Image (cartoon, rainbow over all chains, first blue to last red; front, side):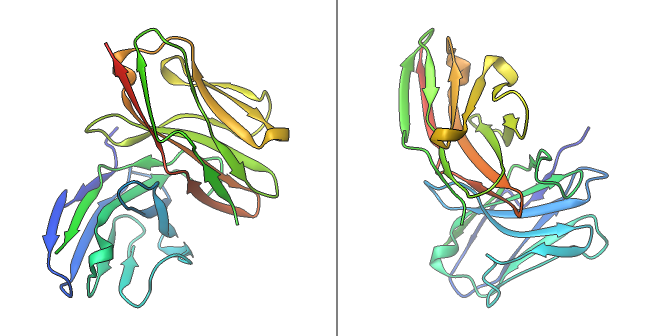
Length: 115
Length: 113
């Protein structure tokens, strides 16, 4: 079974530039998550999708971050414009259902460096 | 708001030593508890989880964790560690009414051969 795919794996940009990350979840998984993991911290949920609808985006900085999952499969997370404090690993995860007990399967992450 | 504390930031052990990593959580309702592991160069993956039943949960690779409700704890244990257990370990919690998974800051485990 193929895992969660993410691209790119690494990205270096200057502040005020824009960047986009892509995620393809495990086939058949209805729920998709984007997390931000800053160095030395645990992952923090940015947004959760159930199929193509948003379940929770309470921790997404909506003035600069946006995300979409148009066909209920793959997803894109965008930052525009980027700030120095956005330097982090951005993790995508998926689970079969929208259930608190479901296992979340994580992708390899995209390491973003903002200069 | 729910939160998770992992007080051990970096643990160094010799092979065959016993392991216990602490995890304490703050949540007012029914909880689900998870331990995730990230081996060097690999993805975060589930080690074990608890959501009901026997409070002693067994996971992959000989790991186990015990849910002690009165202490708000879910410590991870392994009787004899191996070099291949070198990794970062994250405790996480969610629960009824707040299904968002909240992670601790992680514990880096280094096993010396």
